[in-house]
Length: 320
Image (cartoon, rainbow, N blue to C red; front, top):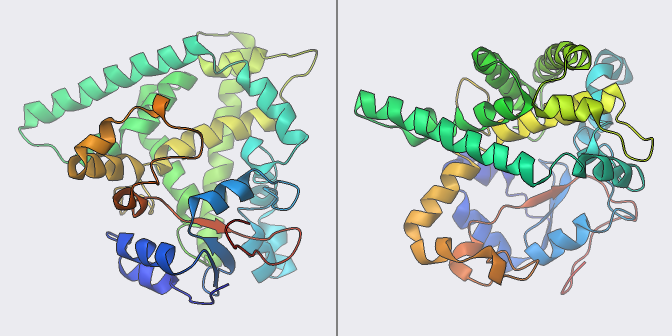
């Protein structure tokens, strides 16, 4: 395992970290980062092996482990709402709890839901591009990538369009404490405030849908039942919040005051550089390929950061 701590290099080159990623892939597989206080994997095969092994690598506490380790008990008492939130939800659980929630949620993400999402996405993209055409200029980040995900997911959930600004602001604030290796207490408290406010907002909508269901995903989640099992309100709120924040985070990896291109824009940029690779059909790839057989595309693959394993240090030699 290499002890090279490259976090400062990435922080110094936020708009073009890919040469650093390439160097990490070519010179090692597992790195110990003192700055991020975690171990880092740079090869797809190792990342996939970890994600598929909850017995050794737990998802519980993966977001808040560093906070629990580094901050005093008195502060942890202050942020109980945040710690509670990140102890719930399908992405923060291991089997069998994860299996139970996934089985429930699969009943809502059916072809009709995805088609509704696709229709909403086409409509929203059209509206954003029409507005850009009327102005005569377009900034792909500010005018398309930044507003698109929250708008589309908000429509899917059934949230009022006029609340889009609040949802983007909450999403950015919630992600703020995850944007740096070790957040400040002030950043953590701001993120907690965003979580508390967004959960209160979603709770009102959940109660309204119980009284008067509509044709939206929140109503479907409220009514969801499989063999007598239902989502608890806590689980429902965590699921809705995760959908909204994840949608925002795909295009922004900084606080709201400084949006920067992320997944959507990186994908468009890669497609412009490598049009043939971008047209390859995923149907012809085996699970696990992800195009990482192409060394040009390897540079674009993200790193995986791990907090703690259940079985001690991570080692890789041809695998985990």
